[in-house]
Amino acid sequence: MAVSSEELGTKDIKKLLLKQAIPSSVGILFMSVNILVDTIFVGQWVGSLAIAAVSVVLPITFLISSLGMAIGVGGGSVLSRALGSGDKEKADIVFANQIMMTFGLASIFVILGLFFSNEMLLIFGANGNILAPAKEFFYPVLLGVPFLALSMMGNNVIRAEGKPSFAMISMIIPAIVNIILDIVFIKFMDLGLFGAALATSISYTSAFLFVLWFFIYKTELKLQLHHFKFHKKIVKEITSLSFVTFSRQGVVSILAIILNHTLYTFGGEHSVTVYGIISRMLMFALFPVLGITQAFLPIAGFNYGAKNYHRVKETISVSIKYAAVLATLIFVVILFFAKPIVSVFTTDQLVIDETPNALRWVFTASPIIAIQLIGAAYFQAAGKAKKALLLTLTKQGFFLIPLVLILPHFFGILGVWIAFPIADVLSTIVTAVFLKKEMNENLIESTDGKLL
Image (cartoon, rainbow, N blue to C red; front, side, top):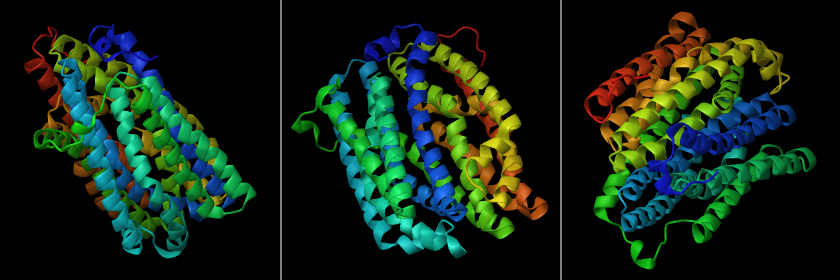
């Protein structure tokens, strides 16, 4: 399934997108199944309160590890355009700087997390009885976060090289490791949440080891000692684009804080558990749409760097169409099978009664999110950091957070759930306006000037 970086600029767009998207989607599927099964095991074998504890901890660890994702995506954009323009030396320097930035920043944040764990957990919503199990889960997971950050960074670089199959494997391995160790540590050794955390941390390490193997034996990038020196211009370029992804995760973490506190205030501990299930389903159900978005980035970035603007526009159009069809099918499944899906996670009747309708509300606007995701991804792939940042923050930052703060005062807990589709619609409209203007004015090789 792998392609060389040069083929990103020559192969048929539809075939290329599918070739890139299938392994990307499978990788995300395994990663989301990993999180999903983890939640099911914890809910069934430890208790519904444990789901709430995990929902509090994961936004903290993902915020820290997202440094690696951010540097991987931002640097991947720079690297894709360098490969597209034939500058292999710059690509090598970019990758070396990504490694140093990721390791240094992740380590600093992990140390801060160890020293200020109680404060972090309370800020992120470890209220009442949630605090004790959250602490049990937090420490082992935190120690594995630097390995997760490096593997997430490496995964995006692998994708930027046009080798999505290897990126897929780097996501499959930790999923399998985590599921197996979950069964051993939680079910057979009865280690509870500590066992779940230990399994998660070991799985992060397994992902890092595979990524390390790839960059020793399979990469087009040939790093030498002189590449490992910070280049101010390249660091600035990586940082400006990485800031987009990290800001998105930062806003997602702020949203998690607000959601956990709001849900606890208006619905109690079980409502935090409800969102824990919904957040897992968001990643799991939308895996093919996210796979297309990931596949879109290197294709658009390479062709933008090569000034093949007609191919960039075709990639945008095809990606939106494919993602929209998949998102619509996903919504139909959620609409009709919400209750059976929820029942898999827990036997807590209060959670089972509340979650299905909440799940349907959250997924209501799924059919139109393709425009929002691909539009924001385009500006990142093209290296247009300010617009990418603006569009990336639109849903959670400009719309969803204010709506979550306001609507529950009028509609109670329902206000939290209806905030999601309203934010999706508003952010999609904003993204569509920006994207259509960009395609009509700046991708000047195109001829039809249409969004879809």
